[in-house]
Image 1: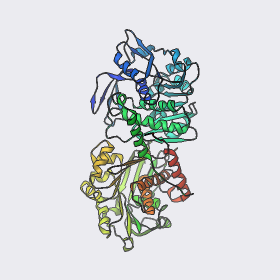
Image 2: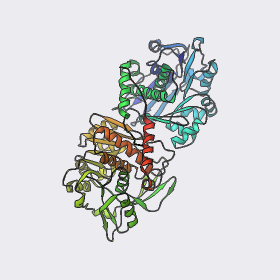
Image 3: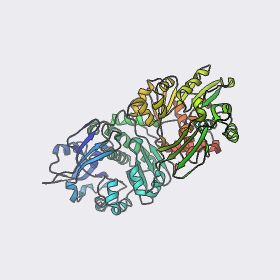
Image 4: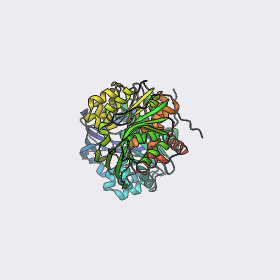
Length: 308
Length: 308
């Protein structure tokens, strides 16, 4: 069994109130697969870069036990590049540049040895590409998680609706949930989105935590209150990677285990924002992860006995 | 032993996307004392109204077991009146009218029979009045909770700083915490505010829950995800009243018990916003409160065992 992660592998240039970077390594699949690597082995990556992408960066990904046979390197082409500037509140940002480059013609190839895929993470990409990946995996995985964003709601609505109708878990942020459902109330939005196909919905609220819904239940996980959020780039992808990595390790897709997955995902995201890019994420060890999860337990744990 | 609640008893006129009211009964002390009444007896109210304030409304307060001997009724004067319009997000509002009336010359009188005060809720009022109340209570209460707002930071900074240096628990919202500490990070803001005197700080984040800090610990309680927030007026006061009411009932002011108090306060606030004004709050029973608290337990409860 394996975990398959698709999404972008890319360059980012980031400005925050704390500083700015040159082109650094980023991309949804980079963050998600590295986050997952702290929980499970046998992670397979599908993505595309240009030949401007440093071999060293691919080696770093491999060193986390991630198979990059499905990472296409396009000769003479340039990697996807995104540049953004965060505002003081760190919750809003301006996009300064989006150069699709290799993504324009991305045709995802699934190597044969990836076909034992049991957990599938469809990181943020065009819904058409996300569907192609689902089509090309012969045996339906045990769990399919799809992450998307408002960009695809604006530009590829019909494809997106088709794609999300085929997945088990959809992850989006609160503004996107409101847009997708055309409902301000997140509770109402969640039920409307669940009627579109996914069995589970995770609404990411950034510094305000995350909500997990199915048709009967709701679970809330806080974000850890941090002294400083240094760079939020990749936090959502890291969260999703930690979530599905934990589920892949435990091979338990019950609601109760998804709660645990969300706590582990939130812990990984809380590391991600402490430094620029993947810098903090690549240097972790499992003791640090466990300590961070303990902080989440301490943060929300209370003991009330109601007398019936 | 008793719980003393000071704050406004007033008229409100409210517009929300769901409708608008004529003048209805409101005021910080009204919400806080009614919320507390579901947890503890022996609640004493100190406030002031004009003779335009309906006797029936005072009777309603009394019927919740709240002593109004300290509620001054000023002949020929008008009660405090506030009017506001909430935006679609229900988190922001415009103040349409603020008529201070009887509040302008409010000199809080503490009846002798209130002097057994063990728990003191200083609801939102001028810090000068809040301090006068502290001065006039002969024996220092076991716990003093002060609620305030940005208005006093803008208009009575020095008094406010003096007042909060004398209390045990300060409750403010996230924007006010940032303003008071001049720090964007809530973690840094909290530590700065705790250095100003209070032993505990509660930061209210509305639909995003509440944080409890002391110098070593932090606790986070979510808000219940609701289908609709009908009218947020009084939710913060209701939260504070439920919090101190629970502490007064249990007479335990440890950090762990404050966590429970915050959950009970959050449950009361979640009722408050379901109808206009105090309408929902006055009609509750303890079974409903317990059921709501159980929803909070279900919302955040997870079970992770870390292997050391």
